[in-house]
Every structure is written in C-alpha cells, then in structure tokens.
Amino acid sequence: MPAFDSSCGWKKLKGRWPGRNGPSRLLLLERIYAALSPMVFGTTLLTSYLGGATAKELRARLGRMSPAAGRTVWLHGASAGEMAAAASLVTALRERGYRFQPIFTAANRAGVAYISRKGAPDAITALAPWDVPAWVSRALDLWQPAVLFLIETELWPRLVFEAHRRCVPVLSLSARIYPRDVARYHAIRSFIAPTLCRLTRILAQNEVERDRFIALGAAAVRCVAVGNLKHLQESTVYNPGHLRRELGLQSADRVVVFGSVHHSEIELVFKAIKALSAVGTRFVIAPRHLSAAQTIAWEAATHGLQTAWRSRRQPRSGWQILILDTMGELKRFYSIASIAVICGGFGKFGGHNPHEALQVSAPVLFGPHFEHFEHEARALAEITPEARVSTPAEIARQLDEWLGDEHFRQLIVSLQRRTLPDAAAVTRRYLDELSPYLVAAHA
Image 1 (cartoon, rainbow, N blue to C red):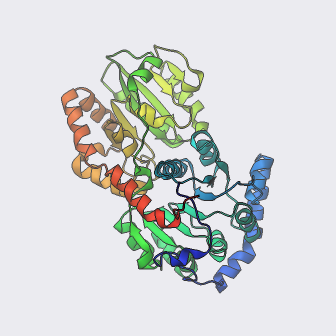
Image 2: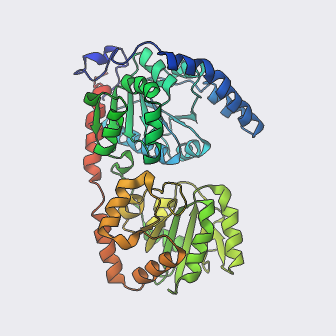
C-alpha cells in the first residue's frame, strides 16, 4: 500500500517542496502580528467561554487536542462545505490506496458537526487552534502531520509559518479569494505575501483565482488551476424512490427544495410559496443555520401550512412544508426535487453550491448575489438566464413555468447540467497533484 514519508526530503521531489523558498524568518509585520495575537485571540477565547463554549472546545482552541497514532494528514477548512470537500478528498486518496489517519479541523462548530457524522471512523475532529504561536505549535508538535491541506481561503499566517519551519508541506486546495475580499487582500499584500510564498503548492479553482493569488505575491510556478474540490467525483448513489416512500409522497407529488435558507430569506421563501399557482407541490426548506428552523415553523403556521420536521420522522404524509433540520442530508433531498431553489443569494451571503442539485438532476433557480460561486452562477445564467431570479414573484413564476411543463423542465435540466465540470477529471488532477506529497513506499 502507498504510505507517507514525512521526512524533510520534500525538496528532492521535482522542486515542488520549496524548502526555504519564501522567508524562513518572520518579517516585521509578522512579528507584530505574533506579538498581538495572544491578546486578540485570548479575548476571543474569553468571549467563547462566556458564550457557553465547552471545555473540549476551549482546549482545542489552545491546541490541546486528542493525540494521533501513526502517519497523519491534517485537513483544515472553515465550515461544513469545506469539511465535506475534505472528507471527499480523504475518500479519494484512500481509494487510491493511501493509508493515514486524517485530522480534520474547522473554524466553527458546523464544520466539526458535519465531519463528526461524515468523516472517516478513525479521524480526529476538532475546532482549529487559533493563530497564536504557542497554540498552533502545540497542535503541530502533537500531531506531526506529514502534510497540511488548507481548504479554500483558510490562510492563517502563523499556522503556515510554523508548518513551514518544521518542513511540513502546506498546500492550499481549492484555493480562492472571494471577489469582495480582493481589495482587502491587496491592501495587506505586504503582510500576506510572505505567507503565500511559504505555501508548497496552490491548487486554485480556476485561472481567475490563480491570477488573483499571483497578483498577491504567490510564486507563479507553484500555482496551478486544478478545479473546485467540491466537484470531486462521488461514489454515493442516491435512491430517490426510497426517500419518497419514507416521506409519504405519492407518485404525482412534486417537491421543491429551498436549500441553505438564511434567516433573512425566510420571508421571501414563504411569499414565493404563497404566490405559486401549481397544485400538488410540497416544499422542503433547509435552513442554513439550524437556529432558523423555529422561525420557519412559525412562518408556516402563520400561512396555515401543515409542517413536518425531518428530525422527528413524522408525519409520513399530509405535510406541505418539511423542515430539513438535520445535517448532511441536503443533497439527498435534492435527488427528489422537481426544482431546487438555491438560497444564500437573495440576501448578500454569497450563495451556495448549485452543482449539488444539478448532480442529482434537479434544475436550479438562484438569486442575484452569488459571489461565492460566481463562475458557476455566470455559466448557469448564460445558458438559462431565467434561472437567476430576485423577487418572490419571479421565483413563483419560474416554478409555475417549469412545474407546468415536464418536457420543458427536462430541457432545462439538460441545459444546466452542461455547466457541470468533469468530476472524474477534477478528481484525477487533484490526485496527480497531491501524489508527490504522499510518497509511495511499500511497508
């Protein structure tokens, strides 16, 4: 079986491990950051304590984690979406034959909760240590990872420096900079550029993102456009018939799924539902944050709609609104959707991944603010411009049109699925890029 070589011999691998490329000592701004970080993050720690954080969570923020056994790979991301991508990557690496203990850290509880349910059974899962020299050093010394994978934009300067100092390769995967953050990053270019130069490899989502990193000071030779890690090929097969029976749906019942609904979007969702003319339609509403579930229930009651809760497994039939108040099931529910309305873009939240629904053949509607998925949204708007909607009336009108003509709905699905990337190709590119850092050796 392929295994890991965690020695400092990475610089021998075709020049990909930068060795001391990038500053090996802290620059002035970084020293100031290191001096201030205990005070800043210490205040955050106190706030977390007063806010009800558990002792385990507070220990994790200090780098006091569960010990690892054997060869480890550390994967760090912000929240549930990044952790889902990280879990898919671990699955792909293990299918190729690599054996290691994965360590997942997330910036918030949602990411930890997701990976606790979906991650590998031998995984270590924790909140990430905050970016204080002693705290990240403690975690690195405890786990001694063979490689550190940072998902998307999780570029913590001290974490990257401490890993670089220990000859641990640090790769930014699915790397991106949100459009709204470009100006801010350029304003601190002199501070962030040394961190980017210490990265072993930057695997950007596309050429636009690659150019953004290079403009901020990353070495062009170590930046490559590979694809979005969230587009890795999946082995999961969904059985929509089983879920429909579980929910008490009849063959004629159509389902519209409102996915990742933010609190301020709830009113818009219900206005769209009330404006809909199509009969025989059920609605699944998946809140982005579970704290919004009760508001959804209250809004449904206000409109006289019969409500069921997914977590309560009842009722089997008769519901008009199903609140998807469980984690990790949204894509499964997209598989029974006649249409998926991807939220997060009706308020200024950046939108959410529309490809999850398209991958299981649900056509999508989405809002005007999709900066987090700007490339996906642009491609969809070019091929089906009517899919970008802004108001409850526009949502209802498109739902009526697509639900009222099955042949047209299937045409929309076919057109929108043309925007899907080649998942097998994305997976292959990632595995090919990562293999030099997961050095094959026979035990």
